[in-house]
Length: 147
Image (tube, rainbow, N blue to C red; front, top):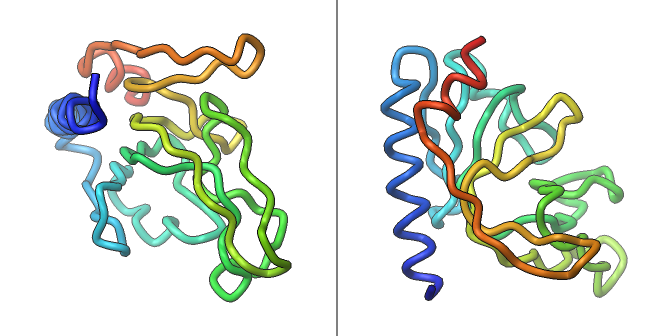
């Protein structure tokens, strides 16, 4: 599957998930005008920052797990959009400078641990070093956060 096909499949799932959650969630476009979007509980959009994401929120993106420039995020140890289902973050090329993000097309949910967990899309097994594709039903994923 090409990256364009992966992005199209994830976009379709994200739209269906947003429709399922339309009464209690809102979609936020990325501040960088890229492929990324957030689906957050109503009233929590101000929690989407370089240092936090709202509980039970979703993110669709093609890039994850990087260190931001310390001018944007003063905590040099905070990994941006940390997905536990993708390779580890790369090291910074220079102190205070950003690292290169990990490429992976997925929709992930912030868990109780404050990290993203894939609900649809690409998934990397860090033990076997193998890639897979996670399928799910948007209605069932929506039900996970509505309980």
